[in-house]
Length: 93
Image (tube, rainbow, N blue to C red; front, side, top):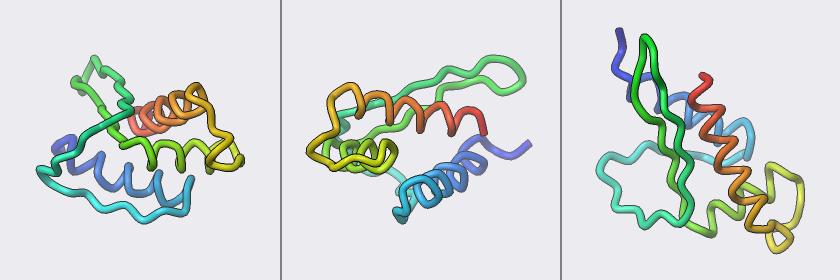
């Protein structure tokens, strides 16, 4: 079985590209100060935790694109919903 990281990296890159028309690059050991975090726990044949971390500006951009609104119109709830949905999409794939 492929390592979870080998499966997730192309999935996450595809999500960013298809949903938000943004280029994503997997960066090993990146030092990110995350403002928003989405987390989904997996149990079963594959177990572990999927975590998506975004700094505030990127999280706001993602929410604006997901909900087709201006960035300054994205509420705190919109941003949380967007990061949570991205995490669910990644876990579902």
